[in-house]
Image 1 (cartoon, helix red, strand yellow):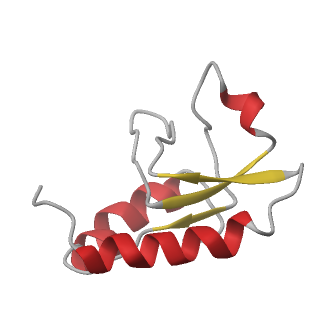
Image 2 (spheres, helix red, strand yellow):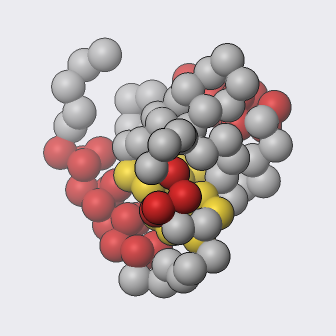
Length: 94
């Protein structure tokens, strides 16, 4: 995979700050962290997962409330392959 461009990094950071300022004890923000979805372990740019950080000290989350992929060059793959993976796992928002 090619190195990440500055536009991608900046967009991910902007999105992260929007969600971090609103997190609660019911959910929290993870940035570039794996999700365990069956046989797949994608690493979305941002994910909102249920529970607290401490809930995942021994395992990766197996679901998310929201997954965000900041797409510049990866848009076709994000709209096909990754969309299918997240949909099959029952993630309600992508």
